[in-house]
Length: 128
Image 1: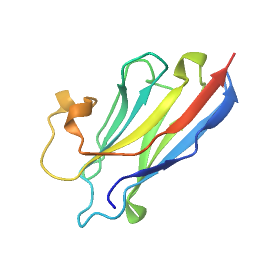
Image 2 (image 1 turned 45 degrees about the vertical axis):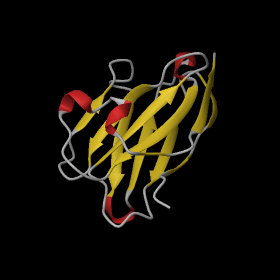
Image 3 (image 1 turned 120 degrees about the vertical axis):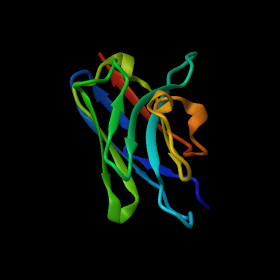
Image 4 (image 1 turned 180 degrees about the horizontal axis):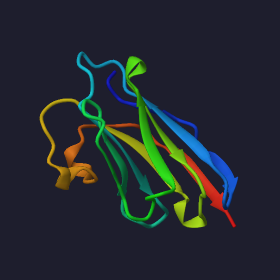
């Protein structure tokens, strides 16, 4: 089973913090790229943060720059999304996405079509 598994969602008040985790296991190779996406009620899925696992390069959506940080634990094939200063508009289902093979141009870093494996999601709710 190569589907990534997310954890760490929950409910917080505005200004609070949460850390999401995504473990990518069950695949014969290590991921090349991992990313976080989110989808709020009635909204399209949007890319939030991206990590080049091998080089450590990161990309963020403008809406979360300076508040969210994506990081990794290589030994565990795990990425984290530290979310600080959360806002009600951050409320969404958060999904982890993984791409195992091939290179990825930076243009596609936050494009859902670039990723092959998706987790089931973890809910984040921010109240005002």
